[in-house]
Image 1 (cartoon, one colour):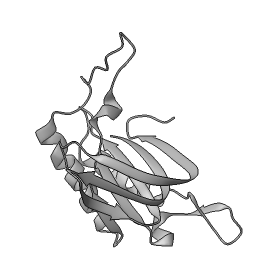
Image 2 (cartoon, rainbow, N blue to C red):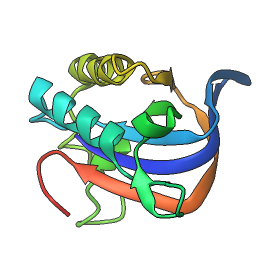
Image 3 (cartoon, rainbow, N blue to C red):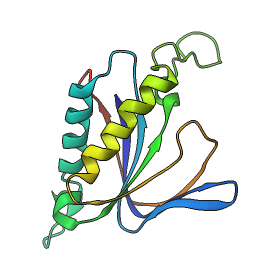
Image 4 (spheres, rainbow, N blue to C red):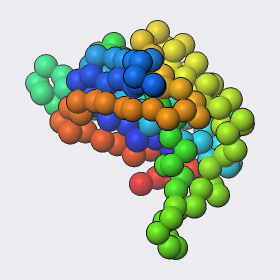
Amino acid sequence: MRAVVQRVAWARVTVDGNVIGAIGPGLLVYLGVGLNDDEHAVAYMADKVTGLRIFADAQGKMNLSVLDTRGGVLVVSQFTLYGDVRRGRRPAFDQAMEPARAEVLYNAFVAKIRSTGLTVATGAFRTHMIVESAVDGPVTILIDSSRLF
C-alpha cells in the first residue's frame, strides 16, 4: 500500500457537487492498493498513519499523533499512487491492484482507522471526486508498506 498523508486544517471531498466527506483538523490520507497488498499491509499502514507524530505539542515540536489530538481522518482512494512514469509520458498502472480486490482492502483500512475511535470520513471508491483541503505546515508524508523511503 502507498499513502500520501497530509496534516490539514480541514479537508472535504465532493462528488457531483455534494460534499460526501469532511473533517476539521487532522489527516488527509490518499491511499493506493498494490498488487501484493494484504491484511498485513492494512494493519501496518493503519498503525503507521494513526501513529505519525506530526502534530505540535505544547512546545511547538512535532510530537503528537492524530490519536493524541483526536483529529479527523479523511481517506481517499488513489490508485494513481501506483502510476509508473519511468517510460513514456502516460502512467502505467500495472502495479495497482484490480478494483474489486482493492476496494476490500481499502475498506479494511478505513475500518481499522475507525476502530481507534477517531472520526473518519471517506471519499467514494471508483468515483470522480473533487478533493479540497487546507494543508497545515505544509506537512506531507509518503508511506509505502513494501519499502522504506
